[in-house]
Image (cartoon, rainbow, N blue to C red; front, side, top):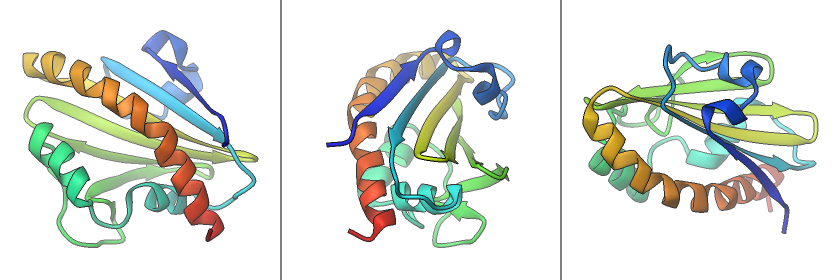
Amino acid sequence: MATVDSAVGVHNIPGSLRALSSLSHIDYVDVFTLRTDAGTTPERWARAMFGDVPSIAEQLIWRGLLGLRLSRGWSPETVAGWKIAERGEDWIRLETASWFLTGNLLVQATEGRVSLGTFLRYDRRLGHCVWPVLSAVHRRLTPGLLRDAASNVRGV
């Protein structure tokens, strides 16, 4: 099983990666990186991770628990309901918000690795209460998400 490296906390994430976030203030950040020989574009990686539209489980977490405003249906402008906000040669940034937090998902694909970064800003006190509990589950599930995406990209 492929090893997934992780870093959690604003001070543990390289400044070059933090600079790709659109958030002026970051309250939570983590980055998970998988070494892989499966190479493709950052957008294809993002779609391999999350799909074109949110799954039932993603809707439960993202819409239900976090109240995130997601687009409905497939669009070339979104990945799983998250707006494609910006992209570079080796990265793509997805954005959305709820009434109590704002989030970025950053997928970076460089030679021999893919990374998924989650950046959050708590816009209301509720964000400070809800996300720390959910983040433990998020950090447990993300390595499997990356491994599954690598299998999808390889067509396995």
